[in-house]
View 1 (cartoon, rainbow, N blue to C red):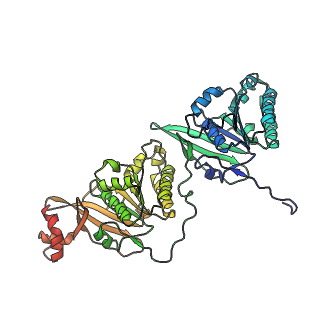
View 2: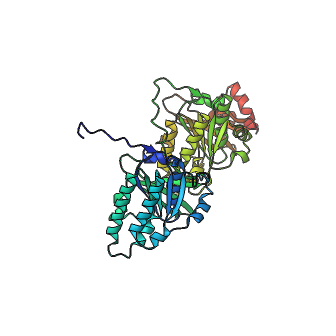
View 3: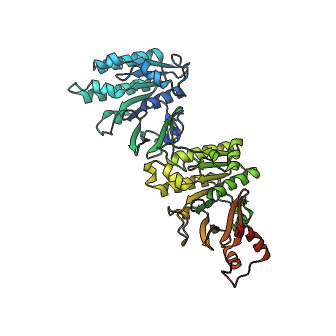
Length: 499
């Protein structure tokens, strides 16, 4: 670029679609010529309406042209069901015009003339043509349809740019075809797709092209709800740059179980991720609830992502009370098309809302089953992205993981993901004197000294009670004649031995 040429700054418009601005690289370029494409039913029209109502103002009005698709009144009947629909804006900053008559004749010059007349009269800042594919089909009978369509597109693009309009063409396309002129002329190409996997409808969006700015590559899952579309940017990218590591030793968070805090070396270092692994009924969820309750006692809010028993319907009354009081936020979803990126966004939203410092995921086993089949196939990578995103957010995370208890070996995770966490607590059952006993051990606390003891523990109305070292307990039963239990250990063991 020569020294005498000034850079042109392109203004970016906020689309009003949660997550889409981030995927687009900061918003939609003003005055751009865009195509929204995909198969029937994937959300193209809903996306166009949602963006139009978000961007349209009296000073930047919108014209929505319908071609050979459903009539405007029928379309509006369904679009009114979404929260983004603003009936006061219709005929004030948003106007709908039918091009069906001109398009059915297959005369592109007439179609262009109708658009030009409406644009000249209203001087809109936003123009939508739905469905543009219908215009192309209407001209297919012509012997030189491709050349006519390309000429029409070029003239339409020049027209909209000269009149300072941001344009959207909506088309039903099942696959990108290189020779198609619309793909060449368009400044932006937003591709929507959907597929059915094990009775789950999985919807994804891809920005194949957006001139003048860097977009987030790849497929991004999205959901259509009462509020319209919500796009889920890749986990870890929405949190911003990771926080710089402190050179000082991190402060410790108490778990609510004093003896466990001692085993951990003084509690869980702030910002760590902790894996609590154990078989069914060993007390993982109770420990996680206790961790959140201790945070609330210390004035720290928390978030729990529940994928198994609903906390409000469980016996964990304290956790239910914390959720009801607003000290702990609940994130849950039973949608069959759940994605890792959606869960991360839900968690981050609640973390920011409460200023939360503690997060619980209960459990990884339920989490894996909750994900759509697409994400189950690569659960290890999904979990890595989740842990990384929460670490960047600066919260302390406790995750529970279901393990099959084989009574003879110690395993930490069925997913081979123990290396992702900073600390590991293992719970398991052992058989002593023809009875099952619970034991707990701290396997790992990164960059910190910790206990290597196997400690017996019980669960009562007051929560988790940690008692004797396993060897001391066996010594009381005569199993270790060389090891004597102290008086304090014998007192702690009394409840365990008796009940």
